[in-house]
Length: 132
Image (cartoon, rainbow, N blue to C red; front, side):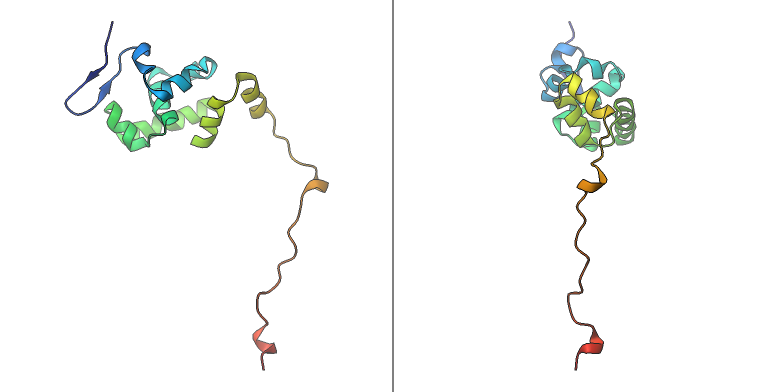
């Protein structure tokens, strides 16, 4: 069994899924195996830290990779999971599997009659020509 090792640089070398479960992001990710199957093992590791709320530079330091590599993994994760940003990523993992899939498929737009238009903009001051 591989255990969690920490090198002198502070880099986590996580060897097993069991050790990954110690991270809050790993617990969130594990709740959605249907989504985890869409990304590689390296991307799963980055995904867990993204779900934990770490920034890309923090993730890079934690896993011992460059921030550019982490950014590339992040973009690949977004693409594979069909999200555009971290908020959508977190919402995707916080929703039940059926609800998340339905939300992704549905692009419901309100009927035009339900759209509220702002009142016509009014000038805040009188035009200079009317000032005596």
